[in-house]
Length: 135
Image (cartoon, rainbow, N blue to C red):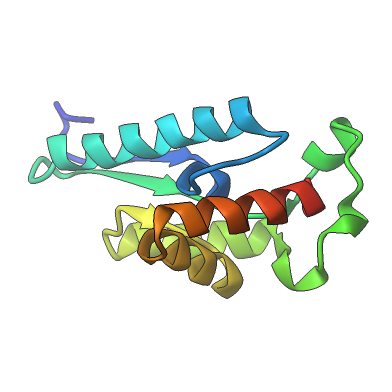
């Protein structure tokens, strides 16, 4: 892509990769946090080359993941779910706009923003409580 001077790379992270804690999902969240950091760094590294790098951070998305992991989807309020087409549509729009991070779903964007601006201790407490309830 660099040789051609064009292209796009979308790294699929997760909303949990942007949050400070993820009880019962520590390895998953840490891996997704790595992807988010990698994508942000690559975005800066390739700036001006014609290659785009974006990090996609969906929250709860209805896929086969939950069934494969024997996870009860009913524990999560309907408001927090996005569909696969919603995630893809938002990702493509954000890629076209040159965004570094794409977060599909208004509740997910609010949660990510809150996690960035709240004091770290409060964010850990709230995130920990929510994850224990829904994970």
